Image (tube, rainbow, N blue to C red; front, side, top):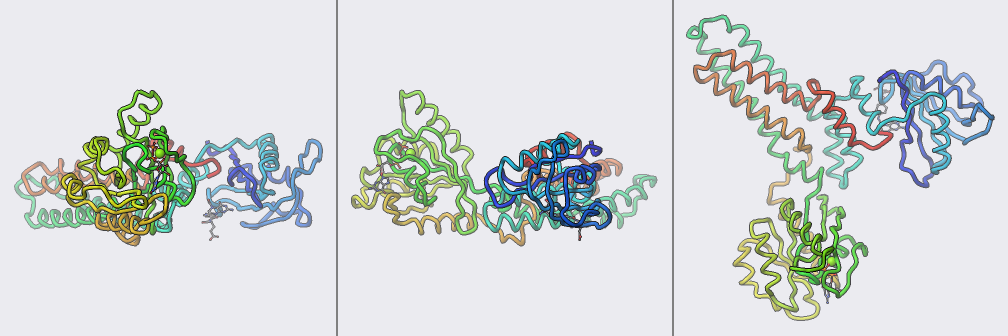
Length: 461
Ligand SMILES: Nc1nc2c(c(=O)[nH]1)N(C=O)[C@@H](CNc1ccc(C(=O)N[C@@H](CCC(=O)O)C(=O)O)cc1)CN2
Ligand SMILES: Nc1nc2c(ncn2[C@@H]2O[C@H](COP(=O)(O)OP(=O)(O)OP(=O)(O)O)[C@@H](O)[C@H]2O)c(=O)[nH]1
Ligand SMILES: [Mg+2]
């Protein structure tokens, strides 16, 4: 596979000032040479590791100039993929980019799969798996905090810790190898005690990493926040107000929203994945019915629920039906439409269902109380111990799961050391723990998993 030379448009498809085509592999420079005509520096392909040259891309078949460009040469291993890389910075428009891409394909390059450049960087040892995964997190980050955590991971902050843990486990396994020939009763007490302590230290380290993993997940994936309430209570109006744009259709017809609308907003550094749903009610309308069903499903997955009730109607039966579905969740209660009437909601009745939930009065339409709402969301998240970004090394659930498994096996190994379980069984648990840690950095993963991870990347990455 690494014998192919791969190529892709690396910038978004649209109108921009420049657009970049990236090509990597053994024939990158040769192909570049065939299609690029330098203005002055004709011997560009010869020596330097890095070079940028001005010139034109010309189709050798008919000598047509396809674009005026800058060409960057990065000679392997001095490149992102550690292979020979040629990048062509064209004028940023779909047509010139596609024409140059087509030419490079005709000259023998192959279209890259999503994530294939990063995959090559991984396979060629430029990055480990956790670092490669962080690249996609950097691209997809919705807030500063999210980007900071991902860049820390690209710098190898998590990988370093994982490698240290792995080495210490290897040390324990070596110790066991050294004593494995002793008859069971003759294993020095002191050696076992020391090993139990080492195990404990490693267990503590993993627990510390896991402590902040939930915060990491929120920064990486966003806090899944679902707006619910009876039809016409103002859910879509609230979404629009928080987004500061007219994203969802608002009308005074109950049952306006039928499908789920999802957007991301940045609330003081916390990415909020906010979801507007169909008003929950019994309905005969088939489309609305499906929407209501979907809303119910979303409630199960939500990290936070914004429950809207209507100040102008007070609590009605439809509200109680909604409340019954979300009683056990983390809920912020918003009394909407306080601009048209005094609050007719019986707050004490609400408190019977949600005794410790925050209750706020807002007007989604007149944008009253939104600052307090944003603050309340942040407070809620912070109370749920959202850690400072510097302390967060784990943000990816794949890594969290691997750490949890490594933790379980270490605990098991430690238990074995304390009891009279044969010492070679302890070794097996240590080895499993080592292997699960290896899943994170990728020094021990299957090709299948690697393929799945990189398939989530975008083309040209
Ligand atoms: N134009 C362009 N911009 C880009 C990238 C790219 O590939 N092309 N990157 C990718 O997506 C990121 C930068 N990542 C990179 C990582 C390593 C090397 C590299 O050539 N490393 C060499 C040389 C280091 C040095 O001179 O100090 C090395 O490590 O040996 C290049 C880019 C973001 N910006
Ligand atoms: N006076 C006042 N009217 C509001 C307020 N919020 C929403 N409305 C109005 O209430 C009506 C319904 O608003 P929507 O945002 O569409 O309500 P919804 O909950 O999304 O409704 P469905 O999608 O049908 O479930 C519209 O006419 C809004 O203008 C508010 O704070 N004050
Ligand atoms: Mg709506």
